[in-house]
Image 1 (cartoon, rainbow, N blue to C red):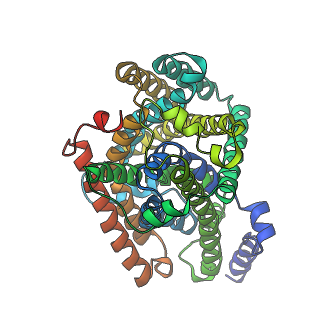
Image 2: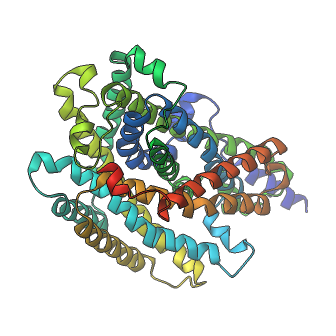
Length: 459
């Protein structure tokens, strides 16, 4: 028995605690949050940010701020589970009350079907940026761009292109922040829109539609808690180290270790979350300066986006903005195709309780299906980038709510009691979930046609 105790102590001594300093953190632990953030810098930032800023001015920053505050809890719970239980929350969705594996089947539906619509919306915006430059129609460009991205993901040889696109996206973020400093909105625009919003003249309809869309797309959908869980687990940190060494996370002697890793995972996510918000706020401020009170619509989307930085840096910045916005959107398309297909490949065997399924075959089949379905949809719809994003984003505001309570349930059901949410955190989850449900109701109003035709509104 003494020998067994000695072996356990030696194994515990082999555990790797996270670096406590910032230098060690960035060197060893930073990363999953930025992958997540780069997904978010797409439709919400490039399409909805300018539309909201051009419609409601600086007040749109408060709208995004409320959305970010309310939605944070779903991802925080996911991170808490990643590092505290040593797994991806989706693996525990089979524990939810109700029909067997229903939430895992819903996850398959989201990534296999809804992500085709999301890819269509973001891809259409990507094509719309190039259409005025190339003279090629949006539907044709969409097929070329999304089809090309699908081929790259299919053969898994897109890392260099993705790295280049990420570089342009980061450069765009720097330009946006500098643009706010160099060319802030006029004083009268700030005074008029900073703390009030004009809902007269039918603008209430636009407010509901755009708020619901922002709530669905910004910073991104709740389903990405599954994706960030995969990226976090790939680093092999947290409670997964305990399980790999045959140690029990419930054992109190490892609680300091788990606590340290949960804090590290939360620190990483907070950085990506803050980065995403700063960029969308900068986009809103610049749009308030250049576009307010005439927001871009479907027809002049590309021109309006290109002019976002013109007041700050002059004519050359038009092309910088077009290239950066294209990179941000196209990198999102690539990540959506890859993430959705891999998620279905991972989750479908869980839903069917069949570990023998060929996940790579599933991945490639889903990838091909998303490319074909999204291309067919865009060929039918034509060039309506803003309308399509608003419509699909409102749909997400309704459908992806389920991931929030699901993550909350698996955290309380699987983590050691010491790491269950505190009363203060639980109170926050309740309040934020109520807000998210309200966002969903707004999204349902848009989705079910309670508001007027979106094409007429943004056309």
